[in-house]
Amino acid sequence: MTKTKWTVDTAHSSLDFSVKHMMVSKTKGTFHNFESTIEADPDDLTTANIEFVIDVASVDTRNEGRDNHLRSEDFFDVEQHPKMTFKATNIERTGEDEYKVTDDLTICGITNSETFSVTSEGQRKDPWGNEVAGFSGEGKINRSDYGLTYNAVLETGGVVVGDEVKISIEIEAQKAT
Image 1 (cartoon, rainbow, N blue to C red):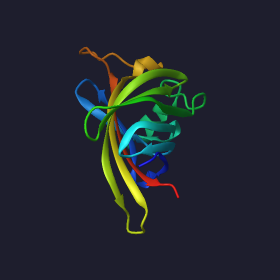
Image 2: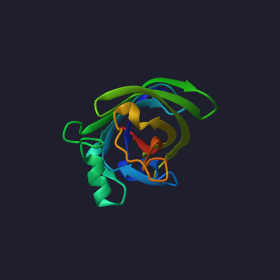
Image 3: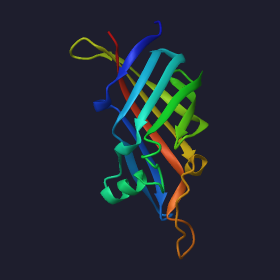
Image 4: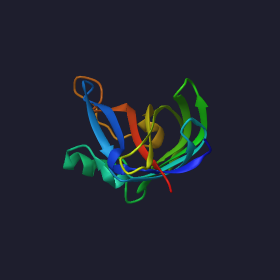
């Protein structure tokens, strides 16, 4: 198959994260609004062009006060940095449907190279005859590498917000016609 354009179905896709809270539990969240450009052969992602633009203000942790704090200057500073971007720079096959995707990730105007594990979940025709493909990805980043350093020290030791952020991506894409 040749490389073709794919449109991400945001109703069946998600960009989620989790971070340690109080050194004992995890707080989870998602970004609801994002756009993407994908040109790929789902059978061989090594030549794919993949880009995402995420609306940072769409962050949702199921707590309005926390979401507003994340949008503030203490964290994402959405007034100055409304978008987060991801652009794949290298894709390496590591197994039959497994890949390592290295990208330039930009958060708060700071760009770093990150690597995510991605699995091609397969392709099918939907009930309307459209070709769809699924992809799952996961990785982790260090939030302080992006200037996200807000924290508070706990009386018993440790900090309120962990530095490691785990990222999980589920994508359903439809072949563009």
